[in-house]
Amino acid sequence: MSEEFKVIPPTTKVYCPERGEGWTLTGITGIDENASVMFSGVRYTISAKEIIGSLLPNYEAKHKAE
Image 1 (tube, rainbow, N blue to C red):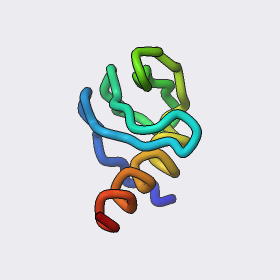
Image 2: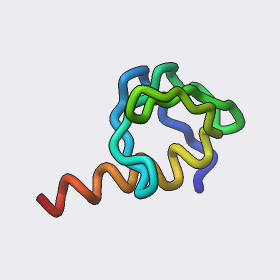
Image 3: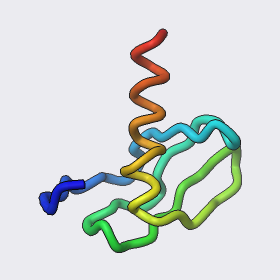
């Protein structure tokens, strides 16, 4: 992952194979943060690295395939 970081705003959609589609409740301004993500009415605290590394790409890939 590059040192350059793009800010992720609240309500950004994400996808987790286990939990389904969700969205960020808080924005992400740094790679070492944790952020709140809502999946099916349940709030999870997830590292920004996991969100940027897998949950965002999963969402984009899922919707490109449709």
